[in-house]
Image 1 (cartoon, rainbow, N blue to C red):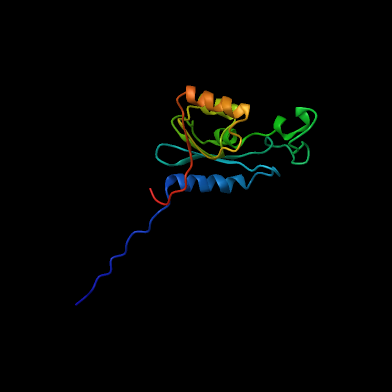
Image 2: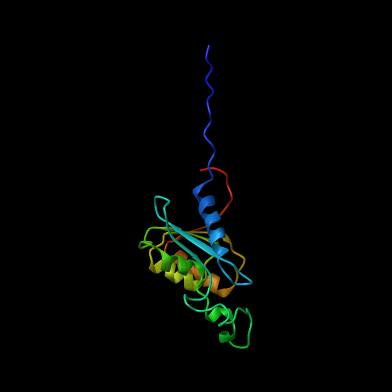
Length: 160
């Protein structure tokens, strides 16, 4: 008598976990010494259409502009020059991201929120919200909410 062994299918990670892991990997491309952020844009079929990380605009050498977080003037800090991960993911998208969802390792700032809204992204999934009470993030939440964009905190779960 022959016995058959049934192999159970492997439990796969959720799409949320998959895309957030990808966001963490692409963040490793950032040369920012204090904050590495990654973003992934996925369409309604869970196909990745854009990736981005924070850094200086293309073609600018790493040592030309400041990486400092503090200075007497804004132009002495990285904040005047850095392109954020979310905006870079939009710039790098291979299709118009209208109707897509954006995964980011950090909640988007007000400037990124404007780009998210203008490009028709419908959902933002973020991992860290460490700057929650800072004005630009309060403004970001206000705009995203007014535009009807769903924002939710990423919570690790094992299956989908």
